[in-house]
Image (tube, rainbow, N blue to C red; front, side, top):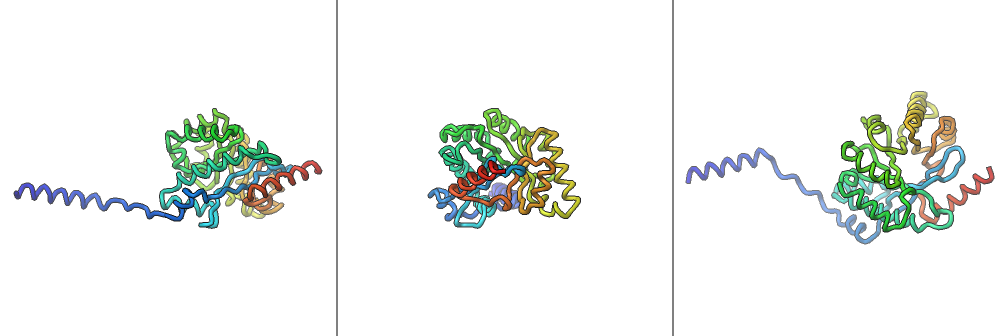
Length: 278
C-alpha cells in the first residue's frame, strides 16, 4: 500500500510541475449569434489611382453593430477563438456580393483580408477556390491581403499562396512597415502588391526621414516588380508626393472611407465622370 501511495504522490508532484491547464477563452455569445445569424455586414473602401482618381478596386471590410471598427471586431473574435470563423464568413459574403455586381461595379476587382488561421490551414486554398467557384466570380478579380503577423511561417505560407496565385488570384502584404521581417517577405513569398502602413505616411509632408523611407520603399517594390498601395492618405500634400514617386494606388479619407455597396457604386460612377472630364 505504501508503494502505491508513493506512486500517487509522485504523480501529484509531476502534475504540479506542469502547472494548471490553460483556461478556455470566454464565450462571446453575442458575436457567435451575430456570425450565425448573418448579422456581420460588409462595407468597401475604394482603392484609387493617385494620378487619375480612377477607382481600381475595393477592399471588403467587416462591420458589426457590436463594435466600431473591423480591427476591434477581429480583436474581439480572436479573444473568443472565433477569428477564423468570422474571417471565412466575411470572405464568403464579399465574394458572393462582388460576383453579383452590375452597373458601375461590374467586374470591379475586390480585395479580401486573411487572418493567420486561414493561411495556416492546409485546407484553406481548397476552401477558398471552392468558394470562388460557388460564387461564380473570376479569380483574377481577387486580391488576398495578408498582414505580416499572419506570415510568420513563411515555409508553409509560400506554397499555399503560390497555388492561389497560379489559380489567378493576386497576393498583397498588408500593413507593410509594422513588422520586423518585412524585407524577408519581399524576397521569399509570391507577392504582387505591397501596402504601406498608414503610420509611415502620417508626417510624410513635414518629416524628411519619413519622405525618404516611403520613397525608398516604393522604389524597392517597383524594382522587385511589385505594385504599391499607400494607406491612410488624408491630404493633398501627401497625394502629390505619392504621384511624384510613382505610387500605384492609395486608400484614405482624402478619397473615401468605408462605403456601403450603393455608396461605392455612386463613388465609382462619379470617379469615371471626373476622369473623363480631366
